[in-house]
Image (tube, rainbow, N blue to C red; front, side, top):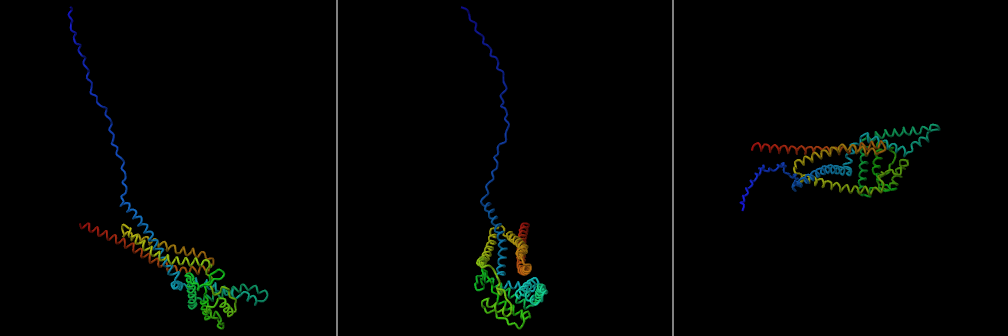
Length: 379
């Protein structure tokens, strides 16, 4: 049996060493930071903003309220107060701007009522009748000059002021629903001024414009206007216009509206005063700094009244420009200037008061800061 030779083991081939696997580096990225979200305003901050807005609104309304209530009170105490109105008009009774239109209107009315041109034409012979219009104008101008001299007399001026005062009182009475002060004819409201006509005629007779031998009737008896007009026409030997002795005021259908407006105005004056005081108090209560609110009230009121002073002249011109008759417009401008001058004086007083309030509030603030700074330095 053959001997088997053991197989020699096959040496294992060595396994080549490999480099350790190094992971591929990954680029680092910045962490994602969420965008900041604005925090909702706190209730206290939101309430402070609303309060500041309300304070500014109350400040503006308070300044406007001070202006409107001041003008309303002045209007109530002048336009609807006969004593105050008469005192203001008395200052312009001797002004040529008022005397000349009045004398011109009266002289024209007298010439027309007496029929001067027709009377002159009757007395002129033949071809010379053509001179009647020129002679009538000359006579009218002469009467005009004579009336200007008469109206410069203190007694006549006093009678003119009484006429204006009486007429103003009647107008106010009508607006206050005093039916006895008015007459309604042909759809118009007429104010009866026969009592003043009686006094005016007596003044004219005393200075010689009406002959002394003319017996004037008593026009203060309160009889119907037609009877008084007839007696006066007979005494003067003239035909008087149908509306003589009365003043045509307004259409009757507008009277009710005017009376209603006056009643509303009376109430509005009181309401404006109360609301203005409440607005001032509200503005001070809402203000985070009352010193600055006082300063704002002073400055706001100053600006409002300064604008009002500039507007007074424009309003006056706008109203008077609607008057077609230049003589009447000139007379109205003279009276309006005298009346509005009183309003300008009142606005000047308020302007000075507002400026003092603004300066005082600033001085108060400077003094407070000075004290605080001194206290901090000492510590």
